[in-house]
Every structure is written in structure tokens, then in C-alpha cells.
Image: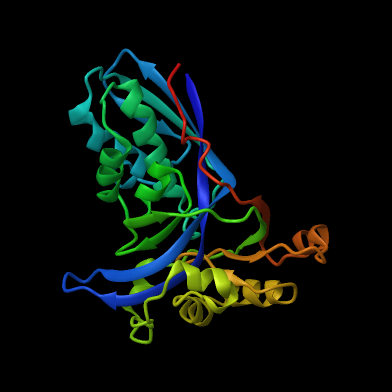
Length: 276
């Protein structure tokens, strides 16, 4: 049995810079990996079936772990059936990339277990078919992202702690993208500009999420008492950077919703994964 972590991410900012002819949106963002992790366990079986447990709320055909197994199957030189168990710690529909991370973890593990022989770049290319966030988890490094999120420039970020709140709501990404008031023409920028004035960089989805989901607005107002609250991805999670003058225990205890204290990661714990 192989047991491996599957880390979450924060979008330190998220700008929509345009819309392509195919309907996809161009964006700019920073992916920051954090130490809030799901855990996946892979056990080979004698039968050829792929069984997944621990995520009963998601139908198999929509399960990104299952989709990752199917997309990798044609490359397998030593295919085997699997029991895959997921210990879910990353909240779903939260903008933390849990599903994408699970898919990437599956690709990385099965590439070795099934002896597919694919490079990280090839795995990332396959992962893009599963979701725009999957490649950054395959590479396992913090990144400046452009395009639809697939053009990655790997960057070094300072070690930090963040308080993350998960409002008690599930945000529809499709609903946010469909809003006519969504800002889709933010001027493109550079990583060096972010380094100079990071607090000037926000999330174009934030005003919409706050107006459509009162729980998000409440969580942001709460965190704004202590720092600068930001939305990650299309939500629902909001976060703020921990500073020296914060009483972390008090903030976590009195949060209006589920709260996490997380640490930034320089790289994914899976980056140097090897099947023993």
C-alpha cells in the first residue's frame, strides 16, 4: 500500500485579463502551495477494476481521481487494478484546488506504479485535460500562472503562515463566470510588480462572491479586522497572511466558520516521490 499527501494551494491573487474566442478566460495568478493535505492510499488488486472510496459525494464519472486513472491507462506497461482510498481534509468547492491536486497525485503515483515512463512535462500536459490547476500540482512548485492557468513560471516565495476560513457555502464557478459585471480586462502585469506591492493585487471574483454569497462576505469582514482578507480562486475560502501582532488562537476560536492555520510550502511533498 502506498500512502501519499495531496497538498492544497492558495491563489495569492487572481486577475482576468481577457476572453478568448473559444470562451475560455485568460488570467494571471500566483499559485502558493500550502501544507493542508488530503491523503491518498493506493493498493494494487488482482482484479482489473479501479475502486475509489472516501469520496461518496462525487459520482465516479466526475471524480478527478478516476479520470486521472483512465487518462493514464493507455500508457501503462504494468497495469493493475487498484483500491484507492482518500482521506479528505481539503474542503470541496473552496478554491483550494483539492480535486486538481488529487488528480495530479494520482498521475504521479500511477506513472511509476504502472511503469508508464512519462516525463513530468508529459504528465502535466495530460493533467491539463482534467483541469487548468492540475499542471501546477504535477510540477509541485509555486508558480506565476498565465493563459488559462497552464503557462507556468516557477517562482520562489517567502515562507509564511496563513489563516484560511471556509464559509459554509458551495460556490458555483460557472455562476461567477456568467456574471456580466465580472471584470475581464484587468491590465496584464509582471511578477516583479507583485513583489513590490503585493497588497495591491486582488481577485476579480471577490466582489461577486461577496455579493452573491453572504457567508463569504461575513468571513471576509471578520478577517479584515486582523489583516487583508483575500478570496482564493473562485472561492469559497478566504485567507489572510499571519503577522507578528496577531493572536492566532483567538482568531481561529472566534471565526464564524471553519478555520485553518496553514504554512506555505516551497514545493510539494510529492515532488521527489519514488515508488519503493
